[in-house]
Length: 321
Image 1 (spheres, rainbow, N blue to C red):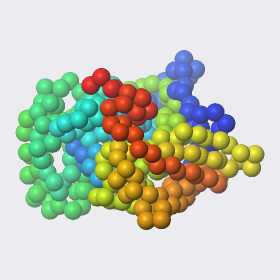
Image 2 (cartoon, rainbow, N blue to C red; image 1 turned 90 degrees about the horizontal axis):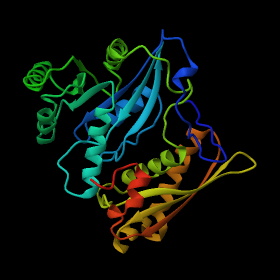
Image 3 (cartoon, rainbow, N blue to C red; image 1 turned 180 degrees about the vertical axis):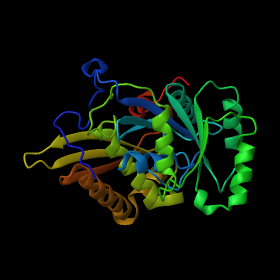
């Protein structure tokens, strides 16, 4: 695993390279948006192709809340994978902003890959996505995930149904978790992306600031530790980040919930739950950064944080939707 080096200011926050700096157009570069219903495997696939964790993965649907970019190089091609929130029927302001972020990621990309869970097939969410893609001008590929868990005849029928009304440039069968078929997916993407200088430094794995990645990792540990006890009305923010003289990193984060009853769930009996979450998050952050991490978690009640414009800005979402 490549290390993300912490800095004294905004860790891992770097900007894209100026295309004018490089004139060798024998290289290729482009943005590939991964879209689909919640829990289709977009984050798992992004992490698999980038080679390290840039998106969190849990059993809960709608885990990814904003567009996450993972950057990978395959031979002479730099691919920027845009992991988008799952597309579903939105009910709250936060839901609408997440779905808008997903479609925005597709609109900005050179190529769009629709990921469909082979076991679930054409759910209501998938059917609605297909409707919207019917007359799209995107260069569109279909990747059917979990192909190893479904019989061949069922895969063929699902493929026929998915492609009945939508024109896909390519249909691929993959297992994001096991890596099956991902090489073929990359080979296809390499043929379709434009000649271009690389937009990011060779060793950059994501364009997200390390503060954001750290908050997302803690949010993942919340989901994994508390499962169905944890409400969706929970978010994590990194409020302080200091690199110490010995190169270790001191991180302070706040877990925001909407009610006192939720705070008790996150804290757990005698603080056991939040201690376990902190330990798991600290361990993973240390592995990613390659230095010791001292993580301090605080749990605070902020009623209706899901309607707070500042929280939306923190997550990179549009509050007006």
